Image (cartoon, rainbow, N blue to C red; front, side, top):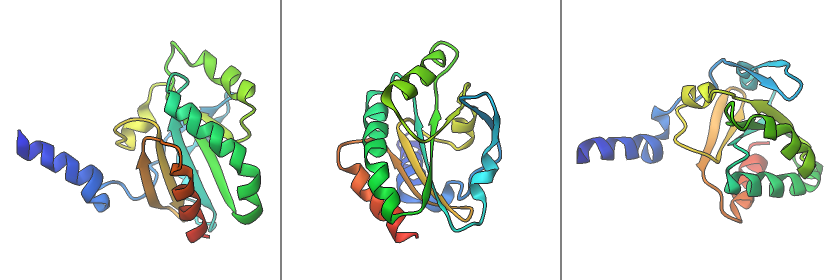
Length: 161
């Protein structure tokens, strides 16, 4: 049992090379019910892409997205990146996504992973979960959110311009 726990900890925290290093192809939808193919995030266009997996019922997720939205105007002056908020809301809460996004005034792409299939395909242990991708390579992964995490994210984006 202890050996299995150690193996899981090594995979998630100590051996990032054992985790998928690119975004797998999967179809999700946006708030306008248009299909988005996630493999497009691997495009080799030198643009950093930030993916934030979240849900309407996740307070740390909402806090993180609100702060990132507040900072986005300043960040976009110095950085070139695309931001995708990927909702993990299921059939019970999916109807709350659009009203929350509009009510908060979030100005970024919102994708809907209605059955959390994409999250499972990515082998993500929980939310909030942030991933930074550039030219098809996953450069950074972070689970959870506490105030100040946005500073590390800014540095990762800046260092990969």
